[in-house]
Length: 244
View (cartoon, rainbow, N blue to C red):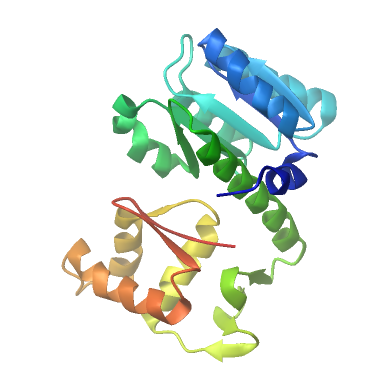
């Protein structure tokens, strides 16, 4: 369980755009956001949300730190809105709120780069955890962007981009060809989920003998043991991503 004070310490300087067509749900949830964030703007459909996103940049010469959007909305849904935002800012942090019966959108959202999800009705502790993780990722991303040659990972690991070398507390960890390809893909996708299909395509292009996605399991399993499961998160049934 994430402590409220820990979350607030990360979120207090951030701005968010919150898009939700259910006005009562928007108002209720917005009360939580306004206590946590420096600034919260809202919209009741995707089109209005996109207009506010563009207007905010024109006025402030920077984007919102976080966008939180529902999936099913009038005029423009959350999937289309996310695609439009990524055209403008490919690194935008977006959290998608969905109902249990909207699982069919999951893979499409993952494929376009959504990294965090919330399920209605919102559980308060889960909400805090997602906001904490997203905000922490933003801060870590900012730190790593300063020094793009070296990326600090969770658990004492670091990745040298130019040489494609992995280190643990300063000591080089020997990687196989497949493991190096995995790391290059994970780093390229940053906090986004690398889908199983995407991983297979990368490995297959360099190793045509791979017969199917089933051959990925032992490769990834050995790699996760080598680099620590605390550094690579398994998003069940979808794929994997690095933890920073």
